[in-house]
Image 1 (cartoon, one colour):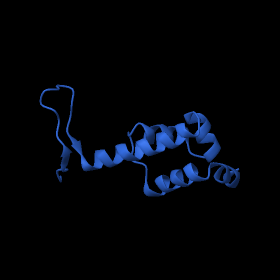
Image 2: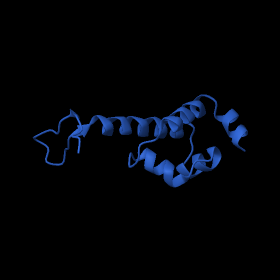
Image 3: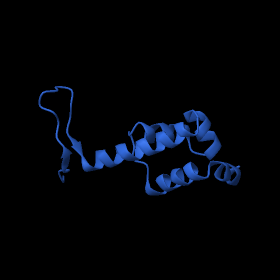
Length: 92
């Protein structure tokens, strides 16, 4: 098994802190983008999921960084952030 590179080591003075890998950092950045896009539109997770046809469980997993949002999903969310009404009309 290949060992992941640690990009942010745990703080030795904080027993609850943990090492962050490059993969974990990427997952967290994607989660933040998705969550910030949704909240900037003033939508709950259920509202966003229904409006843009994303399974609400998948959205939750992405926002909580339990799963890494794939590249196509990140691109879709970026388009939603720029043109929410057009996207909603297109998927309706």
